[in-house]
Amino acid sequence: MTPAAIPGIVHDLFAHMPMVQRLSLAAIGVGALLLMVLERVIPYNKGQKFLREGFFDDFAMYTIAQNYVLSIVIFSIIIARVDTIGGFSRLQLIAHWPLAVQVAFFVVTHDLYIYWMHRWQHRNKYMWRLHEAHHSPTSVDWLSGSRSHLMEILINQTVEFAPIVLLGASPAVIPIKGAISAVWGMYIHANLNVRTGRLQWIINGPEMHRWHHAKGKGMGANFSTKLAIWDWMFGTAYLPIGQRAGNYGVRTWFPVHYFAQTLYAFRPFHRRASTGSVAPVDGALRPADPAGGDL
Ligand SMILES: [Zn+2]
Ligand SMILES: [Zn+2]
Image (cartoon, rainbow, N blue to C red; front, side, top):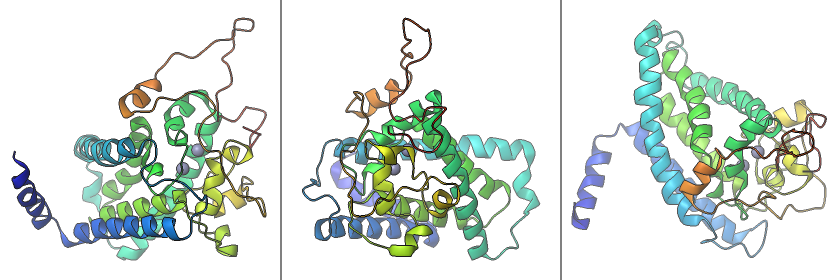
């Protein structure tokens, strides 16, 4: 393939794409551009660079390559196999629901699942291994949220998209839900100094999620992704007045490139010589500290 052939390949790709998929991709692109511009205009942490450490890996490896491969594994292998065996989608259980109701149903139910899954990842040392890559960026911005271990994405996106297919939802729900997740994910990580007031009780945003990426009390709180209401409801909200989050990342050493970051999740657990127990994991909640110790 020559570089001159790339525009033709891109054109063919889009030409065969349903309109709803094109619109969803356009929404993600426009959302990303808007956040990039707003980060320059109203930054939360001043002085954060656009091309910061890990930019290439977050963009090319996590956002493009990993997502591309995992979408094939999740849709064409796992979900397709389950549906072939069970024949669930043929029942068309929710096909008669209006499209907006289908989308709202999957956004809310998956978001509640993600809240508890995320909380568990901060409590359990094995689950933390799949989540620490997401906490490793030392600059939190529109792109850094894409840094998630492939096993974490494999589990969460299978849980996100399998019910949509298996319950017989409209095929349009997948790209719409995908765009909502992508844009909302970029927004909560964006380096934006937004003050949403009481809206932050319901809609999650950078105000709370940046605290979750800071080394300190916030890392043991603010587990919500899209709807902050879960944190307020279940007692894990952390939003100190008049202070600003900073000092992001994990406390222990973490590799800087994609393949090393991916493999690092499978390193052996370090045992304490005296007790034989496993040493506490950076960023993980201790059992006696369910809702946010000083981590
Ligand atoms: Zn987390
Ligand atoms: Zn995050």
